[in-house]
Image (cartoon, rainbow, N blue to C red; front, top):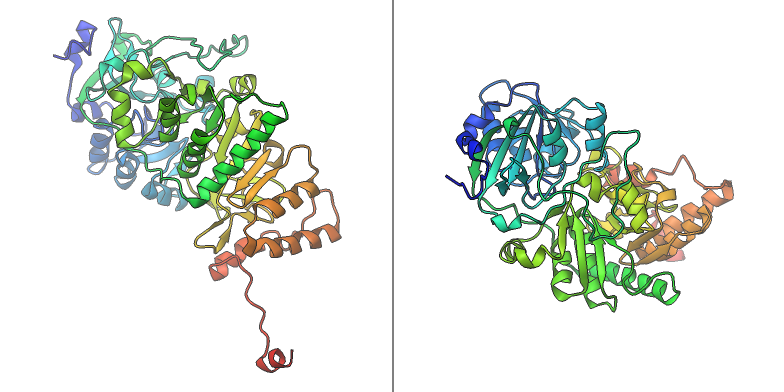
Length: 509
């Protein structure tokens, strides 16, 4: 049975049901699961674990590459199966339990999880649950639409459960480049100098004796939930394209630019759409996730090659890729996330990083994770891996949220994920602020003039002028720095309350 997919004969005897495989997971264990931004995640065994947890005492520490699809985080959270979760998530139910203090969430740069496991800073993985398209003759695991942290989980786990997803064509074999760095110190440099270079194998190497169970599934990945471009994201994209075109005119970049990185989500995906109408050519990407926009750039010929750790796309694009794998294997490669996000490689390649901010302040500090400074949204993801090491660190956000009641540009961010030293460019639909080589006061003037929504600009300028009168290298009024946030908590809007003018005075005036 499935001998074309399970090419190691002895492993064909280890096919079991999802419920049988789930019994290998015990209370208190650390479980490593494949899955990165809804791609390449396991479908059956996690649901069986959630069902068990709803009937008996079963709580685990769950480590993945990034977020999971198929409502897996929701099911596990509702069943009480999660004691700890890392390093990233996007689920509403799980987020609520995290912010209520019911589940311990460890937010991490995505390049660091495997390093911390390898160094023993985290509890070792007891069970790895990995989605595969095939198992090779010597027991190697061929991943599906993501790699994430799977190679490191397999390397460390005492037991391995493979979900063999026959909905993914076997022709996906060859798409991956699996390389796991050696121990520190004395580790060899990562030998990649071009986006299309390969360093490793096309499968995850493992002793087949450690594969304890194989579960057969037939289910596609959850589709991307990114929204299509709108007028504001089109404007953001246009600002970035015009800025990069000017960099080309100045001789700082060629028309092929440098390798692009774009974060996950609606705005970053929409921004890349704008490159399709640009005069740039032979572009490359060195990113963590490829979304619809990246595949469209590949299909148009605008993008020559793309490297990532995951492919997270809409349903039509997902099927287009799977039906033409021979074509895409020549233009794509998927790597472990500690390689796709490796600071060493981001700096060597000179990546142009485009990531999304929840809010920015007038000096260029960025909050990517905490609403109101306290409530976790999704996590820092890979944005820090890229921003600190990129040749250009660009952060994008719409200038307002909640129908204009929130300004995305504030006097001081309520939580800092990326400080001013790591942020080169801030872009909203209103404009672009180039912060390179500017002092703090110059940065503030550029951000206020270019990025703030007109309905908030005068108020923010008044704050800055008053702060400058007080003095300092980075002027602030500490008694008022978070006033916009507290005003929103109190009134539901960051706009100041209108000044009351008695009717008689108004008539006199």
